[in-house]
Length: 242
Image (cartoon, rainbow, N blue to C red; front, side, top):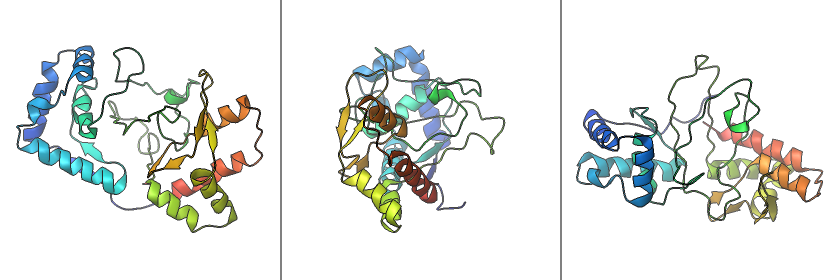
């Protein structure tokens, strides 16, 4: 399947050198995370002529396409990625005290969803949080030896997904209502709270088949069309994805 060209940006050598120096000044990733939670860690780059233009290029592509691919950063345990993530201009989320960066090792033997090599679902992160993240930054540290057959990631832009569902038949219309009109419940197995609301609001989406199924099971709803809706959304998202 071919689609529009990737919204890519290559970090030029001058800016990369500046980012590398700043990342190295943090020392460890733990120190970088502590600083990122306390202050604007990219502040030393604001005077660099290349940094503001780079930030503008990143944000404009995200606004137009929903994501951007940045090439050229060092896989330095996430220090450069933390610097880049400041373009979202929001506070960093933590998954345990003081920790922002998660590192994953993919394996064909694990059962942990985020670490498995099985084909995953289209989803958004933080989908049951009161305030989902503005964005997620990811970096590949080591290329999958089976690439390009493995390690493929696909991204679907919300306006494209909704347009695709609007142009379809009855099953697509039902999935569109599910996303945009119905009150839906989502939760994690280990969470006590259940989030309820419309999945698509104010131009953003919170969605994950796993948390939809968990809420359906916990609340003993037994919605008969849930799996068909999830399948329809996955098919539509694949159709418009890059």
